[in-house]
Amino acid sequence: MAIITGGGSGIGRAIARRLAGAGYRVVLAGRRMQALQATLSELPAGAEAFAVQADVTQPESVEALFEAVVQRAGRIDVLVNNAGVFGPPAPVEDYPYAGWAETVQTNLTGAFLCAQAAFRQMIRQRPSGGRIINNGSLSAHVPRPNAVAYTATKHGITGLTKALALEGRRHGIACGQIDIGNAATDMTRQIEAGALQADGSLMAEPTMSATDVADAVLYMAGLPLSANVLSITVMASQMPFVGRG
Image 1 (cartoon, rainbow, N blue to C red):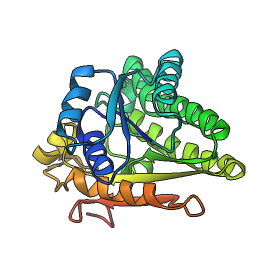
Image 2: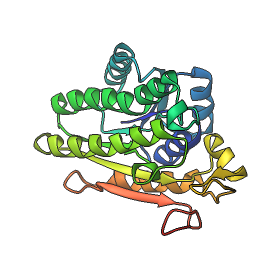
Image 3: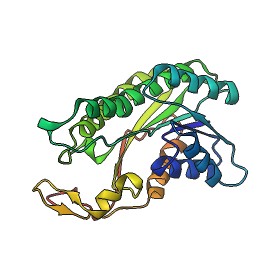
Image 4: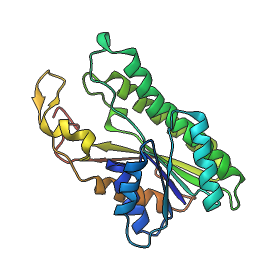
């Protein structure tokens, strides 16, 4: 059984399609049930899948999500921590506290709460163990201008991933991170139109299909628990990341 947070759109929807197509039982989690139902309607015929409305920023909502999944499916084999927001664009000196707090709560605290709940279940289920895949970003390596909250949370995801991978060893729990660069989704439409560069210019950046990301997640999920991809980068080939752009 694989849980995908942020499963109602974009990368989460692409991952759900790919995992369900490969025979995984899939649970979609997100705040908007209508969006989750839309994803369910796009899954391959005969796929075993259901949706649970949940807010990853709220501990009681996360607890209810995992209880519902275990009650219905019996175990959890894979958690894809995908839920996230960009946060409002603004320079550091003007960055709104509310935007900072929401971004940290969603991207970092939400990933921690879901990973903690997954750990608890993966430890007690028999056979024990499982895999957690965290959605990082190229922003886990280098920032974009006017994105201090998003950048900080994605750097935090790297630390979270390493801590989970370390503490998961004794429980048979593997954890890895996928750093994504410019997958084409509703969240990246502005990047395709024109993204702010470090020199202050605007440049339309290339994107790749979200399916390319889903293929990488499927590979990570399918490894035996004796092997782990700690970190993988999947990016649009022509985007200005490597070198000076």
